[in-house]
Length: 358
Ligand code: 1CP
Image (cartoon, rainbow, N blue to C red):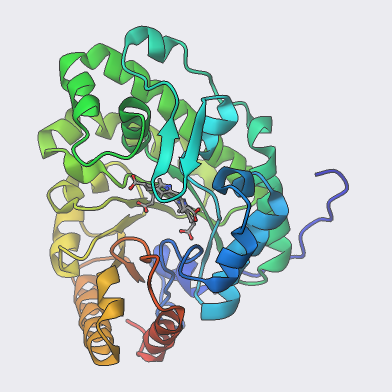
Protein backbone atom coordinates (compact mmCIF):
# COMPACT_ATOMS: atom_id res chain seq x y z
CA UNK A 1 0.00 0.00 0.00
CA UNK A 2 1.58 3.26 -1.08
CA UNK A 3 2.21 5.98 1.47
CA UNK A 4 1.64 3.80 4.50
CA UNK A 5 3.12 5.28 7.69
CA UNK A 6 6.05 3.63 9.44
CA UNK A 7 4.80 1.47 12.33
CA UNK A 8 5.06 3.06 15.76
CA UNK A 9 7.96 1.60 17.72
CA UNK A 10 6.90 -1.50 19.63
CA UNK A 11 8.57 -2.74 22.80
CA UNK A 12 8.19 -6.47 22.78
CA UNK A 13 11.15 -7.77 24.75
CA UNK A 14 8.95 -8.31 27.84
CA UNK A 15 5.96 -9.78 25.99
CA UNK A 16 5.11 -12.96 27.96
CA UNK A 17 4.44 -14.95 24.75
CA UNK A 18 7.91 -14.19 23.33
CA UNK A 19 9.66 -14.61 26.70
CA UNK A 20 8.10 -18.06 27.21
CA UNK A 21 8.93 -19.11 23.64
CA UNK A 22 12.59 -18.25 24.10
CA UNK A 23 13.33 -19.82 27.48
CA UNK A 24 12.89 -16.81 29.77
CA UNK A 25 10.66 -16.25 32.82
CA UNK A 26 7.43 -14.52 31.67
CA UNK A 27 5.67 -12.01 33.94
CA UNK A 28 2.45 -14.03 33.53
CA UNK A 29 1.38 -17.26 31.83
CA UNK A 30 1.01 -16.39 28.14
CA UNK A 31 -2.12 -17.61 26.35
CA UNK A 32 -3.58 -17.33 22.86
CA UNK A 33 -6.07 -19.60 21.13
CA UNK A 34 -5.79 -21.12 17.69
CA UNK A 35 -8.74 -19.87 15.60
CA UNK A 36 -9.34 -17.11 18.16
CA UNK A 37 -10.55 -14.98 15.25
CA UNK A 38 -13.55 -16.39 13.46
CA UNK A 39 -17.01 -17.73 13.83
CA UNK A 40 -17.20 -17.81 17.65
CA UNK A 41 -17.27 -13.97 17.57
CA UNK A 42 -20.49 -12.11 16.62
CA UNK A 43 -18.42 -9.09 15.53
CA UNK A 44 -16.57 -11.41 13.09
CA UNK A 45 -19.79 -12.77 11.62
CA UNK A 46 -21.04 -9.22 11.19
CA UNK A 47 -17.88 -8.05 9.42
CA UNK A 48 -17.81 -11.12 7.15
CA UNK A 49 -21.50 -10.95 6.14
CA UNK A 50 -21.60 -11.06 2.34
CA UNK A 51 -17.78 -11.15 2.01
CA UNK A 52 -16.13 -14.38 0.80
CA UNK A 53 -13.46 -15.95 2.98
CA UNK A 54 -10.66 -15.54 0.40
CA UNK A 55 -11.88 -12.07 -0.50
CA UNK A 56 -11.48 -11.06 3.16
CA UNK A 57 -7.99 -12.62 3.31
CA UNK A 58 -6.87 -10.33 0.43
CA UNK A 59 -8.35 -7.15 1.99
CA UNK A 60 -5.70 -5.54 4.26
CA UNK A 61 -8.23 -3.52 6.31
CA UNK A 62 -10.39 -6.60 6.96
CA UNK A 63 -7.31 -8.71 7.78
CA UNK A 64 -6.27 -6.10 10.32
CA UNK A 65 -9.71 -5.63 11.88
CA UNK A 66 -10.52 -9.37 12.16
CA UNK A 67 -7.08 -10.09 13.65
CA UNK A 68 -7.67 -7.35 16.27
CA UNK A 69 -11.14 -8.54 17.36
CA UNK A 70 -10.03 -11.30 19.76
CA UNK A 71 -7.22 -9.10 21.12
CA UNK A 72 -9.69 -6.40 22.18
CA UNK A 73 -12.26 -8.85 23.47
CA UNK A 74 -10.21 -11.50 25.27
CA UNK A 75 -6.89 -9.84 26.16
CA UNK A 76 -4.84 -12.75 24.80
CA UNK A 77 -1.03 -12.48 24.73
CA UNK A 78 -0.59 -12.87 20.96
CA UNK A 79 -2.46 -12.05 17.79
CA UNK A 80 -2.50 -14.50 14.89
CA UNK A 81 -2.76 -13.04 11.43
CA UNK A 82 -6.21 -13.59 9.93
CA UNK A 83 -5.52 -15.57 6.77
CA UNK A 84 -5.67 -19.19 5.66
CA UNK A 85 -3.17 -21.88 4.75
CA UNK A 86 -4.40 -21.90 1.13
CA UNK A 87 -3.90 -18.14 0.65
CA UNK A 88 -0.37 -18.46 -0.86
CA UNK A 89 -1.61 -21.19 -3.23
CA UNK A 90 -4.45 -18.94 -4.40
CA UNK A 91 -2.08 -15.97 -4.68
CA UNK A 92 0.32 -18.02 -6.83
CA UNK A 93 -2.53 -18.71 -9.25
CA UNK A 94 -3.91 -22.13 -8.27
CA UNK A 95 -7.67 -22.29 -8.94
CA UNK A 96 -9.26 -22.88 -5.53
CA UNK A 97 -11.89 -21.45 -3.22
CA UNK A 98 -12.85 -21.69 0.45
CA UNK A 99 -16.41 -22.97 0.50
CA UNK A 100 -18.54 -22.02 3.55
CA UNK A 101 -19.18 -25.04 5.76
CA UNK A 102 -16.64 -27.16 3.86
CA UNK A 103 -13.23 -25.51 3.64
CA UNK A 104 -10.72 -25.26 0.80
CA UNK A 105 -11.79 -26.84 -2.53
CA UNK A 106 -9.31 -27.15 -5.42
CA UNK A 107 -10.67 -27.05 -9.02
CA UNK A 108 -8.05 -29.45 -10.49
CA UNK A 109 -6.63 -31.95 -7.97
CA UNK A 110 -2.87 -32.52 -8.36
CA UNK A 111 -2.20 -36.23 -8.90
CA UNK A 112 0.39 -36.75 -11.67
CA UNK A 113 3.93 -35.64 -12.36
CA UNK A 114 2.61 -33.35 -15.12
CA UNK A 115 0.17 -31.78 -12.64
CA UNK A 116 3.10 -31.11 -10.29
CA UNK A 117 5.28 -29.71 -13.10
CA UNK A 118 2.43 -27.32 -14.00
CA UNK A 119 2.22 -25.79 -10.50
CA UNK A 120 3.10 -22.09 -10.26
CA UNK A 121 5.73 -20.59 -7.93
CA UNK A 122 4.84 -17.81 -5.49
CA UNK A 123 6.23 -14.34 -6.13
CA UNK A 124 6.40 -12.07 -3.08
CA UNK A 125 4.28 -9.29 -4.61
CA UNK A 126 1.38 -11.74 -5.05
CA UNK A 127 0.85 -11.71 -1.27
CA UNK A 128 1.14 -7.91 -1.06
CA UNK A 129 -2.37 -7.62 0.39
CA UNK A 130 -1.37 -9.96 3.24
CA UNK A 131 1.83 -8.06 4.02
CA UNK A 132 -0.09 -4.75 3.84
CA UNK A 133 -2.43 -6.25 6.46
CA UNK A 134 0.61 -7.10 8.62
CA UNK A 135 1.85 -3.51 8.39
CA UNK A 136 -1.54 -2.10 9.40
CA UNK A 137 -1.55 -4.49 12.36
CA UNK A 138 1.86 -3.41 13.64
CA UNK A 139 0.41 0.09 14.07
CA UNK A 140 -2.66 -1.24 15.91
CA UNK A 141 -1.21 -3.94 18.12
CA UNK A 142 0.93 -1.95 20.54
CA UNK A 143 2.89 -4.41 22.66
CA UNK A 144 0.99 -7.54 21.62
CA UNK A 145 3.13 -9.80 19.39
CA UNK A 146 1.83 -10.87 15.98
CA UNK A 147 2.13 -14.50 14.85
CA UNK A 148 2.42 -15.13 11.13
CA UNK A 149 1.72 -18.61 9.79
CA UNK A 150 1.70 -21.00 6.88
CA UNK A 151 0.48 -24.51 6.16
CA UNK A 152 3.19 -27.18 6.25
CA UNK A 153 4.00 -28.93 2.95
CA UNK A 154 2.17 -32.16 3.88
CA UNK A 155 -1.08 -30.47 4.97
CA UNK A 156 -1.07 -28.27 1.86
CA UNK A 157 -0.40 -31.34 -0.30
CA UNK A 158 -3.39 -33.08 1.23
CA UNK A 159 -5.75 -30.31 0.04
CA UNK A 160 -4.16 -30.18 -3.43
CA UNK A 161 -4.12 -33.93 -4.00
CA UNK A 162 -7.53 -34.72 -2.49
CA UNK A 163 -9.11 -31.62 -4.01
CA UNK A 164 -10.60 -30.63 -0.65
CA UNK A 165 -10.95 -31.65 3.00
CA UNK A 166 -10.45 -35.37 3.54
CA UNK A 167 -10.94 -37.81 6.38
CA UNK A 168 -8.65 -40.58 5.16
CA UNK A 169 -6.21 -38.76 2.84
CA UNK A 170 -6.31 -41.79 0.51
CA UNK A 171 -5.25 -40.05 -2.72
CA UNK A 172 -2.48 -38.25 -0.86
CA UNK A 173 -1.13 -41.48 0.63
CA UNK A 174 -1.52 -43.30 -2.70
CA UNK A 175 0.71 -40.69 -4.39
CA UNK A 176 3.16 -40.63 -1.50
CA UNK A 177 3.58 -44.41 -1.32
CA UNK A 178 3.02 -45.26 -4.99
CA UNK A 179 5.12 -42.56 -6.65
CA UNK A 180 7.66 -41.21 -4.15
CA UNK A 181 9.54 -39.29 -6.83
CA UNK A 182 6.49 -37.22 -7.82
CA UNK A 183 5.60 -36.85 -4.13
CA UNK A 184 8.97 -35.34 -3.24
CA UNK A 185 8.78 -33.09 -6.30
CA UNK A 186 5.35 -31.85 -5.10
CA UNK A 187 6.52 -31.31 -1.53
CA UNK A 188 9.58 -29.45 -2.83
CA UNK A 189 7.33 -27.00 -4.71
CA UNK A 190 5.06 -26.55 -1.66
CA UNK A 191 8.07 -26.08 0.62
CA UNK A 192 9.30 -23.26 -1.64
CA UNK A 193 5.85 -21.59 -1.56
CA UNK A 194 5.64 -21.93 2.24
CA UNK A 195 9.12 -20.45 2.73
CA UNK A 196 8.33 -17.51 0.42
CA UNK A 197 4.99 -16.84 2.18
CA UNK A 198 6.63 -16.88 5.63
CA UNK A 199 9.56 -14.74 4.46
CA UNK A 200 7.11 -12.16 3.11
CA UNK A 201 5.35 -12.04 6.50
CA UNK A 202 8.68 -11.80 8.32
CA UNK A 203 9.87 -8.98 6.07
CA UNK A 204 6.61 -7.14 6.87
CA UNK A 205 7.32 -7.52 10.59
CA UNK A 206 5.59 -10.54 12.20
CA UNK A 207 7.08 -11.42 15.61
CA UNK A 208 6.78 -15.23 15.43
CA UNK A 209 5.72 -17.86 12.91
CA UNK A 210 3.67 -21.04 13.24
CA UNK A 211 3.77 -23.89 10.75
CA UNK A 212 0.43 -25.76 10.75
CA UNK A 213 0.85 -29.43 9.85
CA UNK A 214 -2.71 -30.09 10.98
CA UNK A 215 -3.15 -33.44 9.26
CA UNK A 216 0.33 -34.97 9.82
CA UNK A 217 -1.23 -37.15 12.54
CA UNK A 218 -2.72 -39.29 9.73
CA UNK A 219 0.79 -40.69 9.07
CA UNK A 220 2.84 -43.40 10.74
CA UNK A 221 6.18 -42.33 12.20
CA UNK A 222 8.05 -44.11 9.39
CA UNK A 223 5.92 -42.38 6.73
CA UNK A 224 6.39 -39.02 8.42
CA UNK A 225 10.16 -39.43 8.61
CA UNK A 226 10.57 -40.50 4.98
CA UNK A 227 8.00 -38.36 3.18
CA UNK A 228 7.45 -35.22 5.28
CA UNK A 229 10.18 -34.46 7.80
CA UNK A 230 12.92 -33.45 5.29
CA UNK A 231 10.60 -30.83 3.77
CA UNK A 232 9.35 -29.34 7.07
CA UNK A 233 12.97 -29.38 8.25
CA UNK A 234 13.89 -27.22 5.24
CA UNK A 235 11.18 -24.68 6.14
CA UNK A 236 12.55 -24.24 9.68
CA UNK A 237 16.19 -24.23 8.53
CA UNK A 238 15.47 -21.44 6.03
CA UNK A 239 13.88 -19.33 8.78
CA UNK A 240 16.57 -19.98 11.40
CA UNK A 241 18.25 -16.62 10.88
CA UNK A 242 15.01 -14.61 11.12
CA UNK A 243 15.50 -14.23 14.87
CA UNK A 244 11.86 -14.95 15.81
CA UNK A 245 10.33 -17.99 17.56
CA UNK A 246 9.23 -20.74 15.19
CA UNK A 247 6.26 -22.90 16.28
CA UNK A 248 5.34 -26.32 14.83
CA UNK A 249 1.85 -27.75 15.33
CA UNK A 250 -0.18 -30.78 14.32
CA UNK A 251 -3.21 -32.72 15.57
CA UNK A 252 -3.07 -36.36 16.71
CA UNK A 253 0.71 -36.25 16.52
CA UNK A 254 1.52 -38.00 19.81
CA UNK A 255 3.53 -40.70 17.99
CA UNK A 256 5.28 -38.07 15.83
CA UNK A 257 6.32 -35.56 18.52
CA UNK A 258 9.96 -36.69 18.59
CA UNK A 259 10.31 -36.36 14.82
CA UNK A 260 8.40 -33.06 14.80
CA UNK A 261 10.85 -31.78 17.41
CA UNK A 262 13.72 -32.76 15.10
CA UNK A 263 12.23 -30.62 12.32
CA UNK A 264 13.79 -27.64 14.08
CA UNK A 265 11.11 -25.41 15.63
CA UNK A 266 11.66 -23.59 18.94
CA UNK A 267 8.14 -24.38 20.20
CA UNK A 268 6.12 -27.57 19.60
CA UNK A 269 2.32 -27.54 19.79
CA UNK A 270 0.66 -30.48 21.54
CA UNK A 271 -2.96 -31.60 21.32
CA UNK A 272 -5.03 -32.73 24.32
CA UNK A 273 -4.21 -36.43 23.90
CA UNK A 274 -0.68 -36.17 25.31
CA UNK A 275 0.17 -34.85 28.81
CA UNK A 276 2.81 -32.09 28.65
CA UNK A 277 5.34 -34.13 30.69
CA UNK A 278 5.13 -36.94 28.10
CA UNK A 279 5.34 -34.35 25.33
CA UNK A 280 8.63 -32.88 26.59
CA UNK A 281 10.09 -36.37 26.99
CA UNK A 282 9.28 -37.02 23.32
CA UNK A 283 10.16 -33.59 21.91
CA UNK A 284 13.39 -33.30 23.90
CA UNK A 285 14.53 -30.78 26.52
CA UNK A 286 15.29 -27.23 25.40
CA UNK A 287 12.15 -26.63 23.38
CA UNK A 288 9.06 -24.79 24.63
CA UNK A 289 5.61 -26.41 24.51
CA UNK A 290 2.29 -24.92 23.40
CA UNK A 291 -1.14 -26.31 24.27
CA UNK A 292 -3.14 -28.31 25.17
CA UNK A 293 -6.68 -27.73 26.49
CA UNK A 294 -9.30 -29.80 24.66
CA UNK A 295 -11.46 -27.23 22.78
CA UNK A 296 -14.56 -29.22 23.83
CA UNK A 297 -13.79 -28.51 27.52
CA UNK A 298 -14.99 -24.93 26.93
CA UNK A 299 -18.51 -26.40 26.63
CA UNK A 300 -18.37 -28.26 29.97
CA UNK A 301 -19.08 -25.43 32.43
CA UNK A 302 -16.85 -23.21 34.62
CA UNK A 303 -15.89 -25.85 37.19
CA UNK A 304 -14.60 -28.26 34.56
CA UNK A 305 -12.80 -25.46 32.73
CA UNK A 306 -11.08 -24.37 35.95
CA UNK A 307 -10.10 -27.93 36.89
CA UNK A 308 -8.67 -28.62 33.40
CA UNK A 309 -6.82 -25.27 33.19
CA UNK A 310 -5.22 -25.89 36.61
CA UNK A 311 -4.24 -29.44 35.61
CA UNK A 312 -2.54 -28.21 32.44
CA UNK A 313 -0.75 -25.40 34.32
CA UNK A 314 0.54 -28.00 36.79
CA UNK A 315 1.64 -30.31 33.98
CA UNK A 316 3.37 -27.37 32.28
CA UNK A 317 5.29 -26.57 35.50
CA UNK A 318 6.42 -30.20 35.68
CA UNK A 319 7.41 -30.18 31.99
CA UNK A 320 9.49 -27.04 32.63
CA UNK A 321 11.16 -28.74 35.61
CA UNK A 322 11.96 -31.62 33.21
CA UNK A 323 13.70 -29.29 30.75
CA UNK A 324 11.01 -27.58 28.65
CA UNK A 325 12.16 -24.04 27.81
CA UNK A 326 8.70 -22.66 28.59
CA UNK A 327 4.96 -23.08 28.11
CA UNK A 328 2.46 -21.12 26.05
CA UNK A 329 -1.13 -21.88 27.02
CA UNK A 330 -3.39 -22.71 24.06
CA UNK A 331 -6.01 -25.18 22.98
CA UNK A 332 -5.05 -28.56 21.55
CA UNK A 333 -6.70 -27.46 18.27
CA UNK A 334 -8.78 -24.48 17.12
CA UNK A 335 -11.71 -22.78 18.89
CA UNK A 336 -14.90 -24.59 17.84
CA UNK A 337 -17.38 -22.28 16.05
CA UNK A 338 -20.15 -22.76 18.66
CA UNK A 339 -17.92 -21.79 21.60
CA UNK A 340 -19.35 -19.09 23.90
CA UNK A 341 -16.91 -16.17 23.53
CA UNK A 342 -17.59 -15.17 27.16
CA UNK A 343 -16.13 -18.51 28.27
CA UNK A 344 -12.96 -17.78 26.26
CA UNK A 345 -12.57 -14.37 27.95
CA UNK A 346 -13.04 -15.97 31.40
CA UNK A 347 -10.55 -18.71 30.58
CA UNK A 348 -7.91 -16.16 29.59
CA UNK A 349 -8.48 -14.26 32.87
CA UNK A 350 -8.20 -17.51 34.85
CA UNK A 351 -4.90 -18.43 33.16
CA UNK A 352 -3.52 -14.95 33.84
CA UNK A 353 -4.53 -15.23 37.52
CA UNK A 354 -2.40 -18.35 38.09
CA UNK A 355 1.16 -17.86 39.35
CA UNK A 356 3.77 -17.84 36.56
CA UNK A 357 5.98 -20.87 36.18
CA UNK A 358 9.57 -20.32 37.37
O1 1CP B 1 -16.07 -18.35 6.40
C1 1CP B 1 -15.38 -18.75 7.36
O2 1CP B 1 -15.41 -18.18 8.47
C2 1CP B 1 -14.55 -19.95 7.07
C3 1CP B 1 -13.88 -20.55 8.23
C4 1CP B 1 -12.38 -20.32 8.18
C5 1CP B 1 -11.64 -19.41 8.96
C6 1CP B 1 -12.15 -18.45 10.00
C7 1CP B 1 -11.49 -20.98 7.31
C8 1CP B 1 -11.81 -21.95 6.27
N1 1CP B 1 -10.21 -20.50 7.58
C9 1CP B 1 -10.27 -19.55 8.58
C10 1CP B 1 -9.15 -18.75 9.12
C11 1CP B 1 -7.92 -19.46 9.51
N2 1CP B 1 -7.43 -20.60 8.91
C12 1CP B 1 -7.01 -19.03 10.49
C13 1CP B 1 -7.22 -17.72 11.22
C14 1CP B 1 -6.45 -17.23 12.29
C15 1CP B 1 -6.90 -17.72 13.69
O3 1CP B 1 -6.49 -18.82 14.11
O4 1CP B 1 -7.60 -16.97 14.38
C16 1CP B 1 -5.98 -19.99 10.53
C17 1CP B 1 -4.77 -20.02 11.44
C18 1CP B 1 -6.26 -20.96 9.54
C19 1CP B 1 -5.38 -22.09 9.21
C20 1CP B 1 -5.98 -23.30 8.59
N3 1CP B 1 -6.85 -23.39 7.53
C21 1CP B 1 -5.63 -24.62 8.96
C22 1CP B 1 -4.64 -24.96 10.02
C23 1CP B 1 -5.22 -24.79 11.38
C24 1CP B 1 -6.16 -25.87 11.85
O5 1CP B 1 -7.27 -25.53 12.24
O6 1CP B 1 -5.74 -27.04 11.83
C25 1CP B 1 -6.34 -25.51 8.14
C26 1CP B 1 -6.32 -27.01 8.17
C27 1CP B 1 -7.11 -24.71 7.24
C28 1CP B 1 -7.99 -25.19 6.16
C29 1CP B 1 -9.37 -24.69 6.37
N4 1CP B 1 -9.76 -23.41 6.06
C30 1CP B 1 -11.08 -23.22 6.41
C31 1CP B 1 -11.54 -24.46 6.96
C32 1CP B 1 -12.94 -24.70 7.47
C33 1CP B 1 -10.47 -25.36 6.94
C34 1CP B 1 -10.46 -26.79 7.46
C35 1CP B 1 -11.19 -27.71 6.53
C36 1CP B 1 -10.90 -29.18 6.84
O7 1CP B 1 -11.48 -29.71 7.80
O8 1CP B 1 -10.10 -29.78 6.12
